[in-house]
Length: 361
Length: 91
Image (cartoon, rainbow over all chains, first blue to last red; front, top):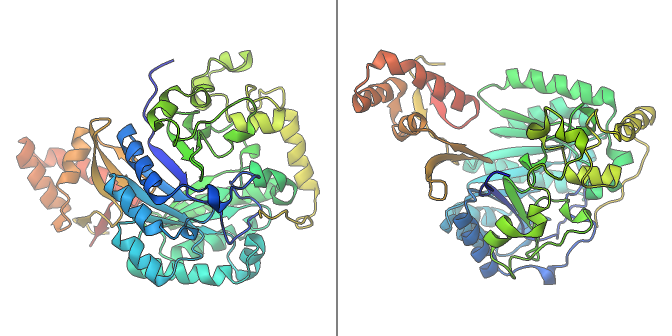
């Protein structure tokens, strides 16, 4: 294996607390309580370690990071460490006074989630009445301040048909960038897959919409598209390869290669309160487990795409094939591809909106 | 679009010295662009009050190169960054 590169980005999940209850939340099914969260000064130390390790981009996330009363101090500590600080938020809880404080402490960028383009859809998906109106008020305040804004439009069966309106809304809000993020099926989203998985026709229409919008908004708003991965012939190069570009820190300091890594049995994840971050990145069993491609099955070893997609996503192989070392079942060469095709066919056969959500709570 | 736009780094986009990798990088919203020497030279001339032609003139002087030779590269580089919203080009 070639030398392990330093990480570029770090996602700090400051808390699992959140006023919203989105059924596709990327948090684990077992949510941590507030008494397990790390205090301000411990996070500040982690930010300094991350910068020393080579992290450039810090994403402050959750749960809802605004649920942390010390959010502005955390932003300040991260900027002092030399990191680029992005706040990933629903907007709920960001009062004018708090936005003032975040700006004063040097917040670089806000990524605002969008659950839907109207209060009816957004509040039903977020499970929080009044959330959409409050989010819009925050979005307008961000625009007035000139804070750079990305809209993260989370798309699935219930709102993919409104993608043109979501893109138009992001542009109206003055976003420099929209991330059209189709729900990926891990954690809560996997639990709610029947309700959330779009039809093939919806996905095909979304691709056309995105292509057209890229022309329309060229130079004004960048449009990034995260397609739903079951619909491709080849898997995504998940995380750019396990343990190669980024890391996540859970609210209690557990260091993870990705959101869903804890769904893989047999891996143990160290805490940054027990070991230096550099040791965890370069030497821990969890980060070493799937680095490179040596562990991949023969079907991947002989494939021309091996060094492009690294056999796809380990957590998806686990979720679908029950084996984290298998080829990602999305790959059309995988012996498990039939599972994915069956899910696609079933999603086409279901009426569009019949299934209730299991909300994240 | 002006033929000779005013070039600005928007708020939230900044040059950063990556001490771990030992190279300059342009940081923007959820992006880190590792810069080669040419890209870095162009961006160090973006002072938020110069037009593209003035940047070309200064770079030509700095590197003792004919303006005509570098103007195309500078234009292409800045237009590409504009499309990614990492620089603003104003009339």
